[in-house]
Image (cartoon, rainbow, N blue to C red):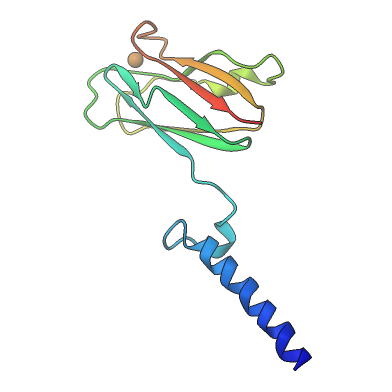
Length: 130
Ligand SMILES: [Cu+2]
């Protein structure tokens, strides 16, 4: 009986892991702890959504819209004071379509992004929770 009891707990634990793995349908179980990036569309002439909140270490993925006719970039206008390597939070080039930009955010705080070509129209914020 004691042996059966231990096995019972092991099965329950495995079931929890399996459940966590189903969050990203079809994703391998080992990816269960890696959160999917929040996707932000880079369009003519807006970011959508214009504000996202992620957990510390979370990621944002900017995806340029296929319907764009204008060039856009992603540029960090202002980030937390403690942020290192601020420059890596901006794209090095502009793109019209067929571009993505993925960035991880290990430093909590508020990040303001703009498109340098359309700085008054295209603004967004990323809030990284502690
Ligand atoms: Cu733009």
